[in-house]
Length: 356
Image (cartoon, rainbow, N blue to C red; front, side):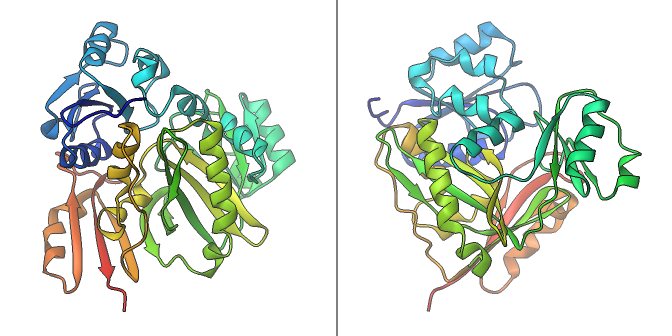
């Protein structure tokens, strides 16, 4: 792929906060961004040079969008494959294969297992009978997840005991039932891979979730993560190479006494990498733009002794500006979402401490 020169147009499928931050990074490098997403609170739209607010099945609008783009990428992994496949393959980065794998939890687990990763015990569930069989084989505690379209704890049912399982019914669409993992910490490996196969990796944060949603990422990640991160990095590199991936790729893991256990993959920039905007030599957003445009990748070294990134959720955004009065170096990012509701990510704040 030839380098997309400054002034070229990057098309972003999706209109959320990740698209907003990608657009900001792209503009610093001299690129023009346009977006495409169905009608809604598309917070990247006010930063884009143009925005197509059309349905994913609108073939005419997708074709018109594609004709304006020198490069096409996406900002979330639930873009329908039909829409992605409507884009010119030679302008698309990452390629569609990464979405084919990541959009189905079962396919995703099988893919990384073939590369040597360890997953929690799991079974595909397509009926009440399958669900009972999975409970018998794997036991409880466990978690039932929709095979597709779940994120931030949505489409998930935690089952603490066999008695509790009696009150849970198959939701009527393909799912995966997983055994719960006894872990010391959760962490993510975020890498960027260029068109030439070069891979660079950021330091791994320790991640804290509540109700399936990431609420905090911190560095240093602690000894349990640091002892296992190289194994996880090797799996992430192999995954990126097997997918012929271009751009930023995220793999999430549990640090356990038996070693790293793969949780899930995100073929995009990731919430647990937001700290890189202030905390790394090159942010995940800038490096994604560099990679998909054929530019040299930037350094990924951490710039501070400690970093603490926290999501601002729901109505907490109404008082977020108070953070700016704190001592130290709080870096506030609000996403411009109109409606603050429970469980909705409205922004994040990153606090850094200088190296001594």
